[in-house]
Amino acid sequence: MKKSDITILFVYPTLFNPERGGIERVTVTLTRAFVKQGYKVIYLHHRSDIKVPDYDYPAPVFFFPSTDYNVPENYTFYHLFLKEEKINIVINQAGNFGDSKLYLSLGDNTHVKTISVLHSNPLLNYDYFSEETLKLRNNSFIEYVKLSGRFLIYSKLKKQYWESRVENFSFLFDHTDIVCLLSENYKKEIQRVYSKQPDKIVAIGNPNSFRVNTLPLQKEKILLYVGRLTKGEKRPDRLLKIWKKIYKDFPAWKLIIVGDGPEREQMEKEASRMKNIHFEGYQNPEEYYKKASLFCMTSNFEGFPMVLTEAMQMGAVPVAFDSFAAVSDVIKSGETGYLVRPFDLDEYADKLKLLMSDEEERKKMAQTGFQYIKRYNVNRIVEQWENLFNRLLYNEQ
Image (tube, rainbow, N blue to C red; front, side, top):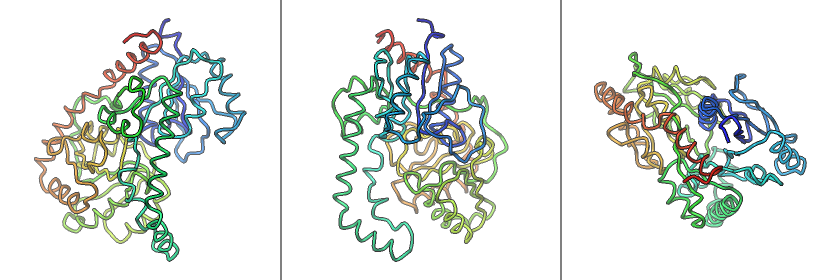
């Protein structure tokens, strides 16, 4: 079978607009590389209701007939779609979630091979469950009452969270050919939950987004955040608390926040009491990376965060919490950036102060990170994907 005879289908709930997030950018990057290699690529989604500008997608885009996931008409449509479009490989980009029950239902298309990608830590927020469950979400009286209730049933909630992980992976491994992690370090994580069928597990990191040969020269005194403004795993609210600790001592610096989400209004309200914070909304982050000297991540967990590699490709030195296994793949603390104890805001602020005060150290780390991150060159990552395709389609090891 020639590459031109192989059709790859990416499935995911929402459109792969690269301005929306990392999963979207990695999918577009891989799509362009696969097409360049001769494969045919198609996208299939549930809905298009995202607040980002129109985008010229590098693959044909289709939608399920219903935005309700597990309804019969979606299954009927999907089984026929796989047949009519002559799909050979399904890449399920929602492997960590329940969407897989539809995406991995093949009907009589038994020849189709399936790869389910876990774009997050396999345990999600389990290890830091208290960070979300036992925190005030606002200052209302009713929230204090709810928090008291969550304290009383905390153990039960955490047990249910674990059981949902076990249920997800039990289904996933039984209904997919390959489970793709984003780091070798996640193999230990997933085996805590599900230790069967280890032969189905592979690890492939995300490819670099940009093709750059030299570092941008004109860096400005900017701390940059790029990502969704949500209090789930991302926790950008922490960055405002950190900024509050440092901004008075560094009046020439500014914090730029690129992204949008349900917490933006509240964050802007809190930011109004401080100086030099700018909210940019959904934007192509490339120009911001080029100008920024430092990049800040404050997440509870991630998968393989492209924002870190993107920042390092553009010479922005990253600082992040050491709260998920793959972060040490990217940041070698003290060499390419800094890792901070979860979730020590004072230590985080101290690391930023250190870098903000020392331009030579920033330049040194930026150059080291720029060289280090070349290991995720798109050509190297695509080679790993093609080896996986050959394993599935031709039983090549």
